[in-house]
Amino acid sequence: MSDSRTRELVARYVGVWGEADAEQRRKTIEELWAEDGKHFLDPPAEFREVASGLGFGFAASTLEATGYDELEARVARSYEEFVAGGEYEFRPRDNAVRLKDVVKFSWEMVATATGEVMGGGLEVLQVDADGRIVADYMFPN
Image (cartoon, rainbow, N blue to C red; front, side, top):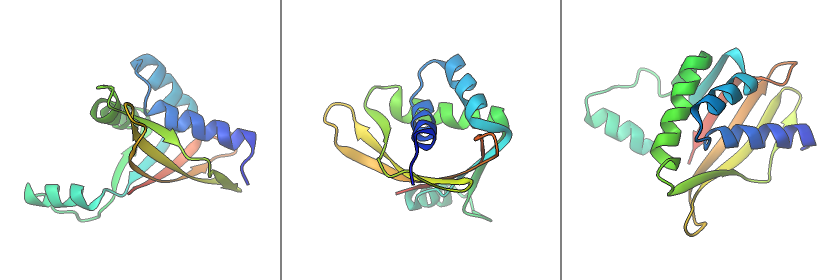
């Protein structure tokens, strides 16, 4: 079931990844996530292959950012890599569902010139009683 609060959370979450203003991005991160909130990324196979080729091994295949500073660095890096040049933007799909303290939805990365979907993923958020993210699980595809 997707209610207006869930849709708003998803819209703000996806929006922060495309926020150009660094101060606004940090403010939104602090509003969305709990202070010790975590972001977990299941990196795509290509990422693992490149890392392996550079001599990096994965004791665990999950990448993690914890707390506002690490979350800000993670979101800013994604913004710089995918959005800042104007080539891509992120948008949520209209499939958000909430079950108790868990929100699940999909997102897409689209080419700004054509609207063509270039990538995407599944997001699973665990929220606290105040609706702030305590755990964020990202599964790009």
